[in-house]
Length: 267
Image 1 (cartoon, one colour):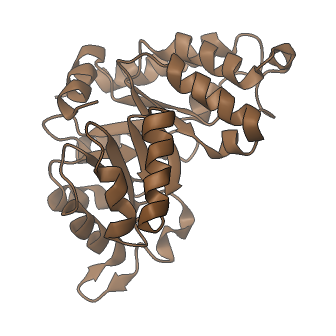
Image 2 (tube, rainbow, N blue to C red; image 1 turned 90 degrees about the vertical axis):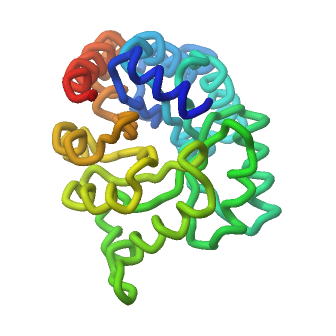
């Protein structure tokens, strides 16, 4: 998916919501366990219920990989079921030596046909480069994350700048605003103005709204650019809004609430 296509879909939907399919088989409604593929059935109903209110879906691959071959099959069926209009993200946080990253890129961009993948930049440019070589695919690099451990490395001072700032400035030179995004956690709202000064034109994937306490209003005011430039990921607050048979209806209601609020912030 191109940047233009993503930006146009955001305008059409009046939404920059990304629904996180962090589908834990131990948390899905019990009545689904009788299905041949409970995880896919859950995802299918969530997608049907929320697709009119979001522009993207993010699959956290850990919840699928932990289930072995059945999990991989559910993940493949899920990404194929998502409408082609919606931006698909493999939240896999890969990043390894070049030939290994090449295989990861093939797995998620060719075999599973995701639009984007999250990548850890710690091993440097040669570990990220294989992902950036794919046309109309996106590499989403960890910048400033929403977890408490961000203070251990990302927020540490390294000379005249903090480590995460050095990462943003360095990685921005490896790609372009057409193929490179950054993960910026919503629990670090005070940093968004500074980050926008460093990266005025890039898209950000923003986790941490919902159960982690990030403010949609605050992030939207501080991080949005002329193309919107942000995808707000919400996972548990939507997909696990109900543990009962009405789970899809409840997910739809919550997604609609987010979309309604977002429509008021879009410039």
